[in-house]
Length: 487
Image 1 (tube, rainbow, N blue to C red):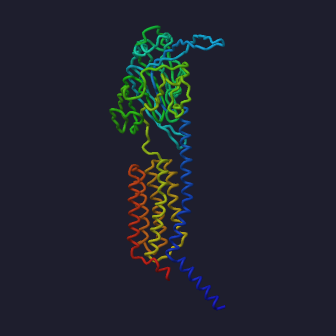
Image 2: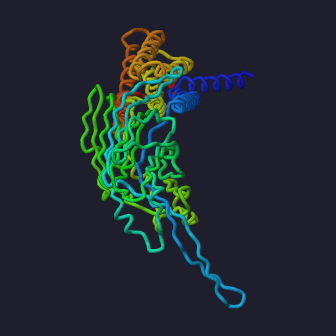
């Protein structure tokens, strides 16, 4: 009996030594870190859900206002007909000749195209979500010189010049507020809504599937100039197609943080806090858009799209112009009304680095336990880890209500103060406990630097990880890791 009791006491002593040793504590910390990844994963899912809610609210606002602005034109469209002979064999080895008429559309781009946009911006809100909107005037000027296109006609092709139309393609009919001016060769034009079946570009889930057209009523002489002024509105971004042989575009707005995007950057840009002015000059030689083209199958056959399906060899022949496919959306350019901080993107990036910023406070508390000789129960480790997880939840909720930098400052300050005071209750004096606050502060400063330096995020993060590992190695270089295990 005594021998059995001694064996049990020996086993209990061995278990006690193991649970009080550094090895057990490190294994326990690894387990806690893995457990805390679960709420971090849930927070990341919550960020995605809130982003989708924000996108839905923005889409509802845009649907009522006029969506993003995509514009192409004006284009000169002239219907025509091609006379062709179709020969078919008969039952008696004869041949039957049938004359058919194949309709087509001749589309001509402007020789010179000038576009001037002057926009005023505002932020519209729905609940806590907002979207940048703009309204203003879009002025289109230029001229057509159809002689080269008319010279390309074959002997069996005929145009109906008296049915020529001027066509302007837009992404949204709702964006048109009114037409202030519409002149062709100095006389007024009457525009009607619709894109006449044209859809020559798609971009970011938006298409040029709306617009307006006006009949020219010219029996001869389609060369001439135009001047069109449209009161228009939209949101988030604008894109233009440089359809002219020579295209000159000027855009100005009272928005201090434009993000120029697309196939062409402005030749000149003057950006101020109160707004910006930008100028583009684009030659037809620098983009893959023809000066004129023929489209068989009538107006409804003109569908040149940027999606992958537009390059499918099975597409109908009338979707091609003279055997060539053009990806017109590759030539779109313009600007985003960019908001300097995307709170949800920054929150997502912050959570991606959360693992590192969970390990560092745990290491700090572990080292304080080692050097002060004050044993700390696993529960305080767990609570300090939960405190760091709560930081990301605070950051998400506050950043929806205020500027991101302010939300980050408040969240980091709250968690840093909480961890500092809690560590003071665990350790014998302020001489050691303030280290927890210092480490938490430096961690949040490093994280903020990573979030705001996207191009150098990997460099900053890797250097920070190296410094942490080097510091831990230096502080524990003389530590007897077997000391407590030996009792």
